[in-house]
Image (cartoon, rainbow, N blue to C red; front, side, top):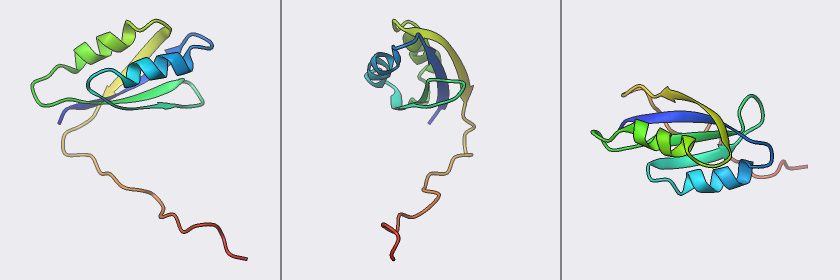
Length: 92
């Protein structure tokens, strides 16, 4: 399934509003607020034959989006899982 990550910069104070609107966009799998160079990271996945460009265009058109940077994923090079298992609180 074709996918991409879109890093989004928003206008000041618009992070949550933009996050909510992006999350409602078809093709968007997840949106996370982050600290650092970008304000949000968006994961897009679409069935084969659909255009990621259309989803990115919708994201760029959202009021409050200042800029985006997109990287596409490589087919066959994806692994899901957790880095650590949650063991509960430390024991005394």
